[in-house]
Amino acid sequence: MKKNSRFVGLDVHAETISVAVAEPNGEVVSLGTIPNRAEAIAKLMKKLGPPEKLRVCYEAGPTGYALYWQLTKLGIHCEVVAPTLVPVKAGDRVKTDRRDAERLARSYRSGDLTAVWVPDRGCEALRDLVRAREAAKQDQLRARHRLGKFLLRHGRRAPEGIRAWSRKHVAWMEEVRFEEVAQQVVLLDYLAEVAHASHRIQRLEGAIEEMVKVMPERMQAVMAGLQCLRGVAKVTAVTVVTETGDLGRFTSPRQLMSYAGIVSSEMSSGRSTRRGGITKTGNAHLRRVIVEAAWSYRYGPAVGAELKRRQQGQSEQVKEIAWKAQHRLCGRYRRLLARGKPHQKVVTAVGRELLAFIWAIGVAIDKARSTSQNTQQAA
Image (cartoon, rainbow, N blue to C red):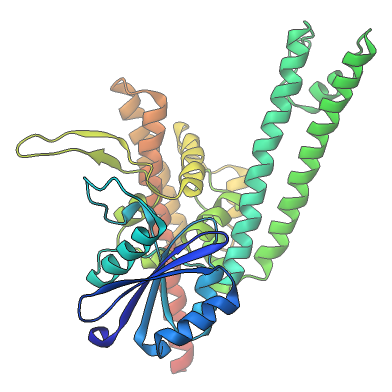
């Protein structure tokens, strides 16, 4: 099948698509540029030949997966590839849309491209919702900073003993008054922006709660199981599942760590081995929530009331993995800190190992569900 296939490389932009085809006989031909419209794409694919003989690829980017779903619906094999892993010649200093499409077609035919995971429509919708909440949290942080720095600039400080952004702190800020009308207007505007950001986050979190209820049972089971881990509450668990999809598609924890870009970079040659900081060439959303969750392992192993509530109804195997994670990760945090490592590096190392326990829980839940389904079918 592969010998008779035509490999099509698409350099996709918002308005245009550059097309190149790698023929089975080794020739790579540029077919020019077409509008990025559904009817133009369908017309092109019809000219290129039968769907079963076409293999199409394009780079992941801001245009999303709309093109992927269109081609898949037409019965055409399509893959979305990682742009950072496309081979580039070291001395090549000319970059055009035509050359990019030709390079994609040529590399796709030789098998040098790495395909990314494409979520289904439901998972993608939930992921968009989670990322919208993340953006809202960032906006809330900026709004709080503006208000806090405005008050500090004018010498207004909260009384001692009041925790920042607690109810008492917000009530104190609402009682602050300025003699100048313009400054009072600024204060009220900043307060309204902070309140708006808080309401926005609550609204999105409620939507996430409702969306999780209609997700497939397998995904719900993994989300609930991950919450047995310390530092992994509902939003973090949902983020992990929506950003990774099926944890079982990773054959080992190391692959999941690499997917998050939280493994060490390396520059080795001959007998010289040099390792640097983490690569960060992975899913930034997943990496962020994992590092945030890793901070909770600086405390000793314990099961508080909230964690105990999240573990209700979970299997003993999942609970055992979570308890083992507490001992392992807390011990690693303290050992690395005792060796003089900076806190941020220590937490990053703990987060990398936390991914291994996340992988173990995901695989254990999938295996248990598979065994249960087989038993029911046999019965």
